[in-house]
Length: 283
Image (cartoon, rainbow, N blue to C red):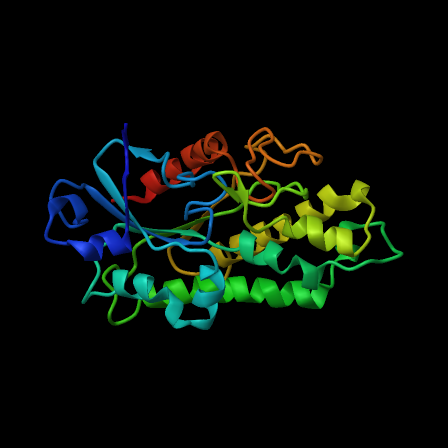
């Protein structure tokens, strides 16, 4: 098994004539386009994300357009996703064998402050969530996936009908652990901040977080099943793969580097599940 070659779209555009940066080079058996947020872009541990550990039997290149905030930009078709629009187009892109998406969890928890509320009825995790606002954020996530399918099957697509593979997210433990870059705190701990501001007893925190991540998983599965399913859209589920973080830890804990991002070893555990599904769908 060989590790996939990971390129950013900027690297491809920099010197597309050089075989080292050209995803269309005959050396590669498979060409995968990746889009999403910080689980695909380097976040938490520098140089660590879900794509880097992926391995395939044949030479494979993954061109990565992911960046923090891309879920929202896809949903609104904002110009911030110009790299992905170019990469998926017949005029600029390659003939991808598959599209890999990582989108939803970071958007949901970044907006947790709008969703989570204090309540006297604490019997169920759902009671701590404003259901109308939760539906609004889930609708943004649905729209982002539908945008990708519409672009894939549009008249200017370089990969019409090819499989799109998404993944659900493992259970996030709310804790005061923002993402860091070489030890310097950046942003994050959104669930911790939202739950603390709402003055919710920490005994309920994991259940509320699991409820939100579970609703996201169910939303993605609904897009892959039933009468209104997106065509050739697949979801890899991987809950209970990672060991949960200690809620009192401020940094690395078990398989998590911060509140919302796995460690390099955590990503490696998850990537094995995702890559096996991708392999099943490759030609």
